[in-house]
Image 1: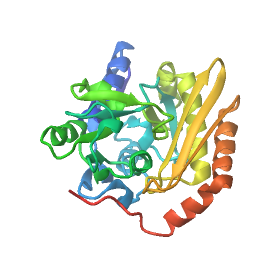
Image 2: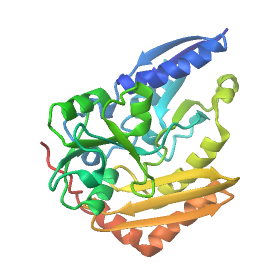
Image 3: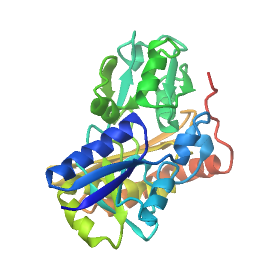
Image 4: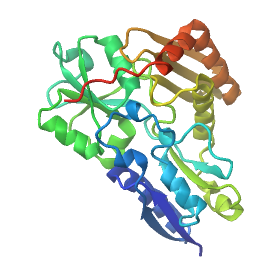
Length: 311
């Protein structure tokens, strides 16, 4: 029996994820404990994520604990993991993906189209804001930080007419009460890695890599490689609205991707298929760049992003 210590953020969703992995490892006969680690992203709760602009804001402190051998492995939401890992770390497992789409959640309204003029929509993401504004320029998009249950309480109290969350988190926590529908990826392209869990280890820990091999899902890993290749080629981070979703369809990888202005005034979309996930991601990024994403990204990176006003 191996004694394993998992590092995790302390949010309700992060702990669900860590406990999920712990349960699977205990089924293999391992002794597993969880250490809660507060990250930069957890400490900064009164500023929109796009304003923070720190790479690895939800992983840096956990990686430090990994390097110091206080923990053996870290469980992350894949979309929080920077596109470039430090050389001493590795993603030993990328688990089977949950629903990657965004979820429309509202007490009163059933679809984005049915929201009244000027409705208040809460979202923590410039990617979601961009695509919402492209569909409905009249909507008032307002920053929404906090745990999933906190965000739902703000909705129920009437602060928002609707909120947009990752469907995977809603499903994992069983918080379906006001879930109206999952927004099609062609309408609202998800974040890179959304819905997938990553298990990070020290690169030299061969024994643990062997233990975790059974949790790695080949098709999900291939999709994530594709999406992260696109994001890396675009040089994207939380300051820029970029989305991508790769899926295996009849043996071929299919990728949809978008890049746009935070105000939704320009949204570029691409779709492509191929057999090499990394090549597909890089080629699709180049197609977006040639259509003007280079201009959009240059402008966004050289000026402060217009983040929605605080309520």
